[in-house]
Image (cartoon, rainbow, N blue to C red; front, side, top):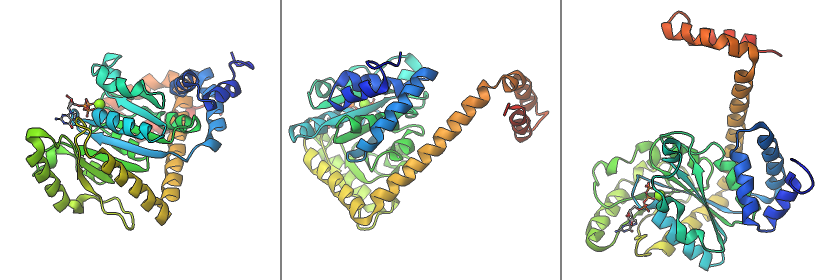
Length: 328
Ligand SMILES: Nc1nc2c(ncn2[C@@H]2O[C@H](COP(=O)(O)OP(=O)(O)OP(=O)(O)O)[C@@H](O)[C@H]2O)c(=O)[nH]1
Ligand SMILES: [Mg+2]
């Protein structure tokens, strides 16, 4: 149905004019696996690309229940007050399992979603482990073209999703809860290596003293933050997302990090490297899809899988044989 009214140009014009439904529709297209949707989505993204790149792209991660959504609601509200347009892409790990959110309201961030300057979009996750949707990066670019000045991507700190989110954002914020200083609460080293700003959340009420100890622990252990950036030391700050305290300071750190990225030239190189990796991922995806769709490959696949399972053939050998079958 690609005509003057529903084609990519018309949809893009509405999106640029601030039409939220057009943006939502565009994101649905980039998430779709249908061939005709994919084609439309690619045209949309081509149109969008020149209008992207200006926003602050911020990843927010942390173990389940640490307060990511509460923090994003508090921060988002502050930023909207200050005249920013805030888009939130929240990766919902439950959607792949339940077909809908078991977390319900929390993930939807209802209060923020009602703000005229905000746009909240749950991302269907790619797998049960909370992997980011493969097209979250595209959704982010569409939000930028639609005029959003801050993009917040929430991801739960399990599985591979943190690395994927760190690879599409400029500043990676980790939330931890007070307590468990020794083992640092099971936060994986691989995640700590990606961190640009660390926030100890729930620094309120009875947790306050413990939060301060946790902050000191992380500050002492700052050698584990490995993301190299000249002139940047990972700040470790106390916040209470619930009481909306420390939110402005946290945001100042994000802005300072962005300034350090720009001053060192790292922003441009990081983004170029991110775009390059996105190209390789797209190539892998396209090649695999083409391979799976090839009739000769499809016919031979069950036999090849069986031979590999039984140990009769090596995976490498079977892969080569399948590739050789592919029609040119
Ligand atoms: N005391 C206190 N509780 C908080 C704070 N922030 C969040 N909470 C509570 O912690 C619980 C989890 O908050 P969420 O914001 O849903 O946490 P989340 O990290 O988004 O959780 P998932 O999306 O399930 O991984 C809720 O009951 C919140 O009310 C805080 O600053 N202080
Ligand atoms: Mg959440």
